[in-house]
Amino acid sequence: SLQKSSGSAEHGGYSHFSLASLHEQEGRVEDAIREYELALQFDPKSPRILESLIPLYLHVQREKDAFQLARRGVRMDARNPYFHLVLGEIYAKKEDGNLQAAM
Image (cartoon, rainbow, N blue to C red; front, side, top):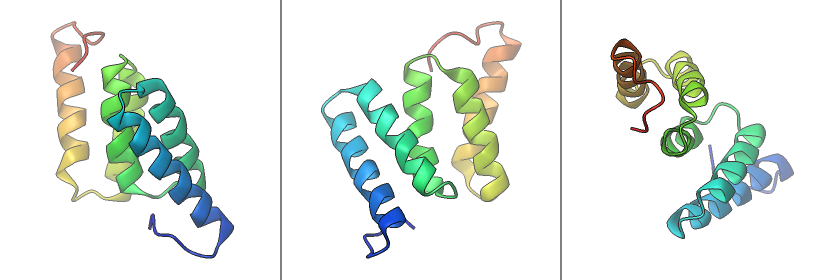
């Protein structure tokens, strides 16, 4: 659903997603996170935004946020293996008592 359109909400989401991708490519992780979060406000049902944001949360040790987004992703698209993989990895780290470690 992240397509350019004449609708301002979708256009805003697309703009934030594009800027987030650019920040990510340039290694500006916190800026990328902020823009992906804004894109998610415009398009809260986009698995693509979740798939982009989750690894950044994990990179900056925000496992709880990554976990919440992965659970949200499963509810939106239970057939998407990525969300299940993230949940499994987070659960495994919790079992090892090493939840704070970056993935």
